[in-house]
Length: 167
Image (tube, rainbow, N blue to C red; front, side, top):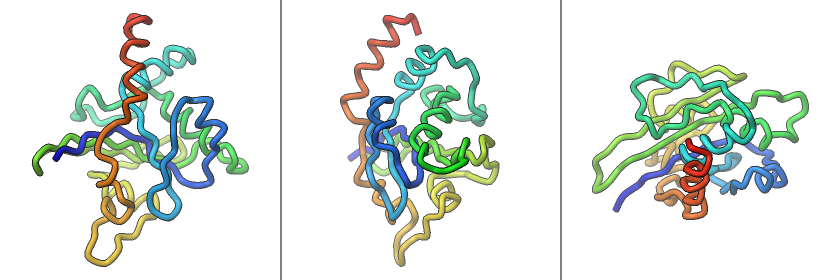
């Protein structure tokens, strides 16, 4: 069985109204985090529609489908809108590509708009966001990411929307 997702992980409180406006769903994971499925088509479309041009600081070694559009930071900020004075909330951007136990994963954490250099994988990203592994589990399994194996179908429409925009 495979595991292939691309997602934003943000903390609570989570603004459901902003999620609706951004056409995303925040799924509770762990005690105080939300998993928000996205795709490179979603971020490219939103970046273009919002007129944003900046890019995220993403390692050059990460594959092309890993989102690099800074609109991800705007999305994270909107989802954390209830945090007083918080303009750049901490968030992780993660991607997996596994099948039959082999594959790769990528993760970046951003705090106050800057990428945390020490993050090397999803477990490290979750630790930066405050996750403590339960006994006998790693952070990935502690928050239940193994249960989120694929990107939801509702994001498929962004591929066609990107085509219409010439992206």
